[in-house]
Length: 236
Image: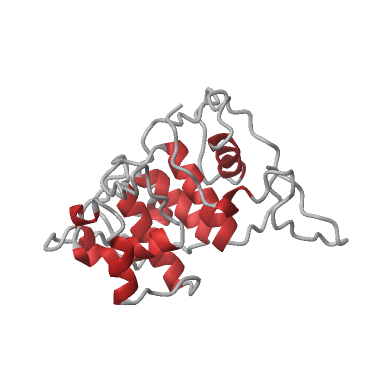
């Protein structure tokens, strides 16, 4: 399995077998723990497997009919829309910006409509027109994933913007920072600062690199543990 960049120190907080955020039931008992799914193709990964299990338990990411997660396959924009809507508890919004390839009534419409206010990638592509197509099967990049998560967490008042000085200082530490527009720096610097976007070997942002499904699970799991209370019993 493809090696994933190091995750934040707090990302393994439940590795000892704790139940995250169990909600008391009517009689003061913990909420039922979702059954641990059987996933055939994630054995042998101490870092990725627990995160993948937690994402699949919550139905934020899925396995195929053969019980395979396909960890090295790209995380698509459609996958990410479902993941982000569920994890951040975003409500579907039929009045949000629509895409020609995600019509009302389609399986992805609710997730895409919920995510649409945060999906403007223009800071990564200055001068580009707003797209008419969502392109659900297109792999999402590290910069795109970070941009959307920062916007959502900012809107939910869980993170605050950095000063211009802090942005400059943080981005100066990344040799490939110039590969993205300076308009995207406030988002990427905040993503690095909050450990939403783990840097790669050599302190590289690798902003244009496609996220694999395993990497997406690890990033989402870390963000969830740090920022988003879990409201169902999840067995590590």
